[in-house]
Image (cartoon, rainbow, N blue to C red; front, side):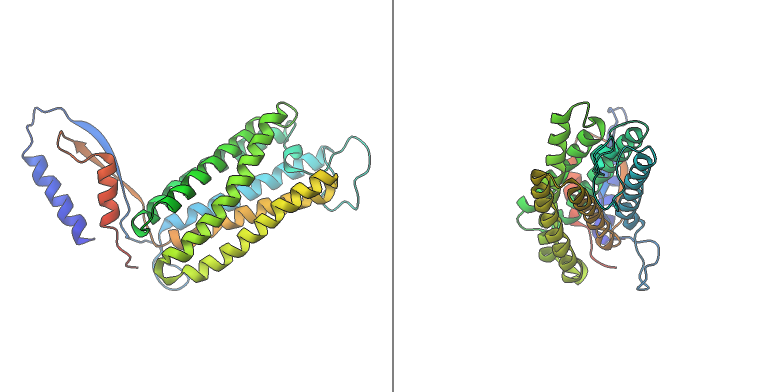
Length: 290
């Protein structure tokens, strides 16, 4: 354990021992980020179990969306993605929003998007805390947090306001998710190269730059095809875009494997540190040892 952390803990114990036992006591939760690791990685070094969070987000969200797709195809709501061309009739192009527009697929779609939004928000907060003590100018890190939070909010709009129920709000959710999601990818790619955690900045940053470029290209191509009414190809591009997004999130496992996030519960006293001060202090004693 970090020596600074031990001294901080001892100082708090001495402070608590001098407090008036009759003073009111309230609960406070402090999030600390010691670099204590568990598990074993492929390189023989120990890895934190938190590396599985972005992987779970990627795998379960991908699986959920494909389940929605297959339900919609089975119910003859959309054409399969491998259809040669779109024929006139009841079926629609296999857009994700159309696949999840009607029950039972809409129920699964709503649940998947809500869970994805929650996990993306957790990843955003943990990533912000991870980079906070390492960036000199915090505006880029704060921008990444805000952008990903807005993209997460857009996911909830997509999942809870189906296209036929409220098209305007649904399209707002689409714009938030794709727009701020793309911005998040570029910000995190820049932070990866700049911070260079464990000297892995280039190894992780270059694939993120490539994925960010692919995502940007897919977004531009998607809206162009939509405006031209080429819906089958636009739907395929949309699926490729979403899979690139999810793959990008999975890459956070590389950096998360170096950190363990834990919640420390302590008694609150009048002169005890505030939550923000405790969080800042926790960031200061964070180490980079593997």
